[in-house]
Length: 188
Image 1 (tube, rainbow, N blue to C red):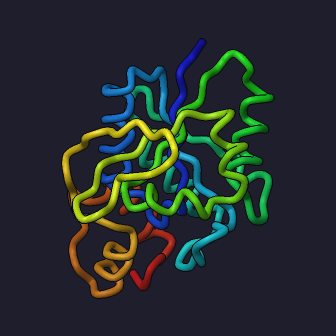
Image 2: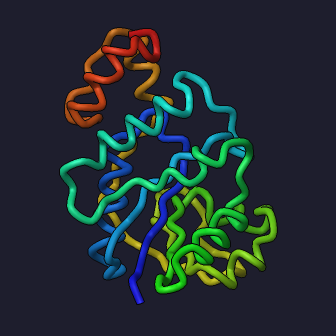
């Protein structure tokens, strides 16, 4: 059975923190691959700044050149609001020879009780959460905790930095920054 990690998000824009999380999951969980999966419309978060096709392309550019890190376009191609349980059920049906790990940030662990059909989701994936200072890691649900180098970086910070004309070198892969400048995203 192949072990596949799925790291979902808006990737608006993708940054080095996403790649560090993917790399740590590959190594520490012994995964065969990690897929970065941009969502079309996040159920809990408004997506602004780049459209779905642009976020997918930026995610592809971010993952290129990193062995074991791939892009899963399922939710963007499906369109609309996607709930994790529905997405993971369809991926599991599509790839019955795989075991899926659902990767989440430490800030999301305590909110698992609010997830849509969490008990059904737990039957088809293994949750792995990245420790994050200042967040409660206690939960009634089984979550494998993963230590990763701490990097206080967010897509919100990067959008604001770009809008202010500041540098983002070393925070965003060069190819992603070039795409942002070419497409005039985030006020660039």
